[in-house]
Image 1: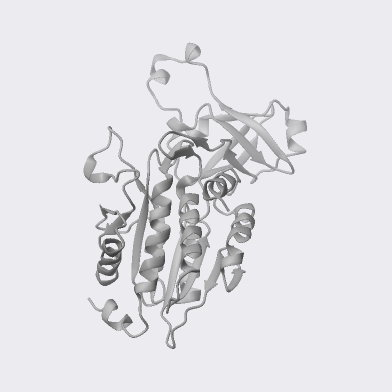
Image 2: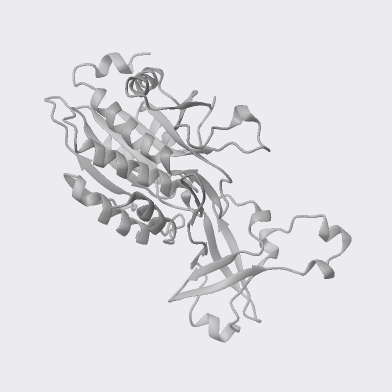
Length: 350
């Protein structure tokens, strides 16, 4: 499967936190031919198992969350306008004027509107409008819309993925459907390798709200190492350089308290051995990724974070470079191949 088309398909498929089932179907269709076993757990995580060839096989969990930020319908007013709440972190300044899709009994198109600037007071013109003051207009009156939409229906921004120059793409939900595609590249690469470890590729749910998918999958699998593939802050002129990573120059490998130093050292060695470019991201505390959930599962699990550089995070025009997905796919496959069955204890020592 062409990875750009796969990325486009899953990014344009609605799947806000708690409503990921349609994305899960596409993911299962793509991964199933490369896995020895596939299942979906009771929370909704999709798990693909790749058996290793060692006698005593280490267990490695690779996680990428497949949920996206979005909205939920919370009220239908007498005039038919829909009030909504956010699912996940939105900057309200990026929401106004967006086209949306309400996923009710059928998909209903709408737009997010507010009072025109001509009619705003001076104070209103200098104040960011709050989400609770915005409305969705579908063109239907209350009687009509109530037949199609219920309180609690999910809502996503309507956006097609856009090809940019220099192998870059823009769109919604690249955080973290790009990570899902990176794992897809990884499992394909791993099929060419006689690896020792048992590997679990997990597409997790609800990372944007609770990290529940990362926590429960790690508890169930009980891995010797967990790796979260997620997105990092791509460099733009308005952000401090020290806080960002550049697009197209390889993944970010996180350094910080959430990260196991022995496994990180090996990951960097593998990147150097195979000439895979990488960058360093610094995160002294919890990373805000599934790695945090994995790390504190059971009695504690060593964790790593590999980040895809991404601009304009949590907007509908997130931007990545497709080369970084390819780099990560190769890096995780070669890293897994480097883990031998008799050296796990040495790698986990501090």
